[in-house]
Image (cartoon, rainbow, N blue to C red):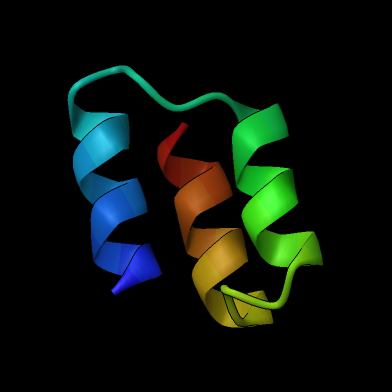
Length: 41
C-alpha cells in the first residue's frame, strides 16, 4: 500500500527523497521498493 502511494506521489511530483527515507526507516518499504522509488525521483 505504501509503495503504491509513494509511486503515485512521485508521479504528481509531491514526494521528496527525505519523505521516502522516512517510510524506509519506519519499515514501510522493502529495500527493493526503496531503490526503485529513489530511481523514479
